[in-house]
Length: 312
Image 1 (spheres, rainbow, N blue to C red):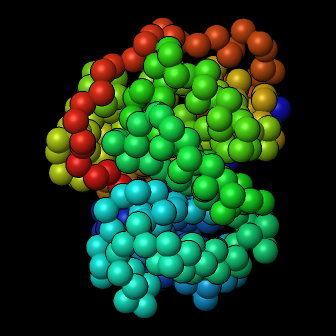
Image 2 (image 1 turned 90 degrees about the vertical axis):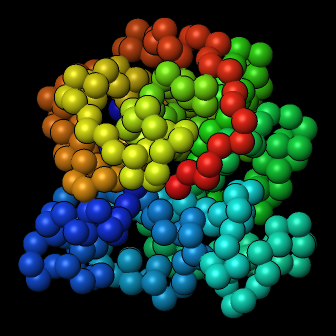
């Protein structure tokens, strides 16, 4: 059975820092991370999507967390085809993803920024979360191939937000493509009633790592504000639904990261605490029957909608 690490998709989200979860005396940058790392063994660096992380900052993250604590770093927006503000670009570079010189420089800066994590053995994965308009096809395949070339030797996880990747006619191709590049498939939990819903499929495409991200099941996912999209309180029964799939993933990968992205107040940290308790209580040997897909995963999935608003 692989190691299962449970955590959240941010430790600096304003809704969390303003919730009172961090105690007095531990509300500065260093105190928050130390407090979080005393309670969870993994965290996602969501801020890296909005700005390229600096090498000094990454080194501080290593220094402020205990041995064995790992960071899953979200790839900078320009590297995944998302719109990027000029103000977010390093050193005033233009936000021009079609400019090869700009793209090369951003890749170099991002690589330098996460190097302290990689060198210390603390880089859990680099998450490439592709936008809803990134649909399966030749262009997307070429983009993934370029990402694989630029990230050779990195632990890479991929989350698709276009449901076409997991429809019947594409699912096997998607699995084979990610496995060819050694990329981890990110499984997701989200509302299943929307045109853009991604089914909770959970194939293992890298023996080293599996990742599951819990986005919450808000019906406002494709239309509401950021707060509306992520405002969701998981019930214990909803989390328990995932236990067979988590056991299956944990039985087929060296490590499994279970991350909660319903970052609204303390909802994510409380859901993570509950999931850890459920996993501890449910610690029984995995059997092949546990990998049986759910009806939702077997379905062809919903039809795609038009270009959705940018998600974080």
